[in-house]
Figure 1 (cartoon, rainbow, N blue to C red):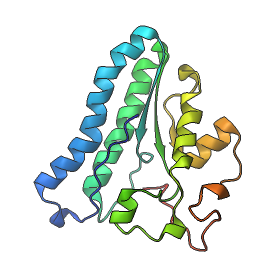
Figure 2: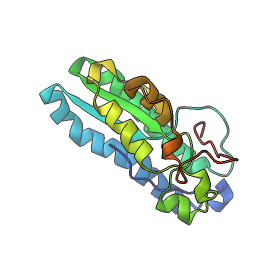
Figure 3: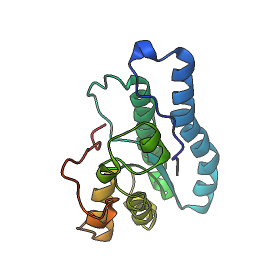
Length: 178
C-alpha cells in the first residue's frame, strides 16, 4: 500500500521547484519505487495487491493544487499501468481515495474544515481490507472511492458510523473528484 504523502495546496507561483520535487518525490516516485521492488516477489508467488492512495484520473483543472494533483494523478496512472502489465500474474493494482476528508494530521494541520465534517480513518482501513480480500485478477485496474469499495466488495450500505461525530454533517466536504 502506497500511502505516504506530501501535501501542498498552493498555486504554481507559490510552489518553488524544491517543493514541487518534494511532493512528486514523496507521492509518485516513492509509490513507483515501492512497487518496483515489491512486484518481483508478487509475480513469483503469483499473488499480490498494490494499492495507491490517490484520486481517480481527471482532466479537470486543479487551481491552487497543481503540484499535488500532478503527483497524485501520477500515482493513479502507475496503478493502471501495473494492473495492465500484471493481470496475468494474478497481481492487482488499484487506487483508493476517500469520498470526504479523513481525520489525520494533514486535515488537522491544513485546517481542512472542521472535525464534524471528517470521517474516521477506519473507513479507509475497512475499504483496504475489502480490496485486499479479493482474488487479485478479479479486482484490478480500478479507481475506487472508499464508499464504492465497501458497498461493492463488502456490502456496506450505511456509512454514518464512519463520521467522526457519528452522523453526517450538515455541510459535508466531498473530495472524491480531486
